[in-house]
Length: 85
Image (cartoon, rainbow, N blue to C red):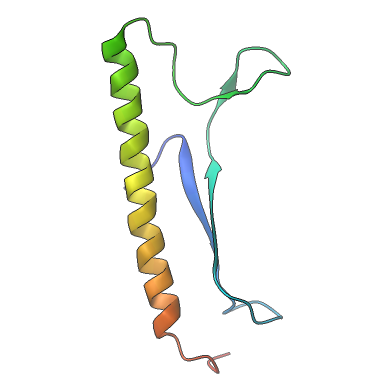
């Protein structure tokens, strides 16, 4: 699933110089700012509760897609032989 606002960063130790456990992070891929020093904004302006609920559903969908991708990556990492460098 392609995401709009959020995405997964996954770092395994396969190409790393030092062995480490897999590291997963969710990062903001796209955002705006109300003011120059304001907080990141990850939805368009919503003028009705229905619009806001649609954006919440979209974000939940993105997070569920990220969870699915992370599960697959962690599972693949767990199956990889430790000495396969």
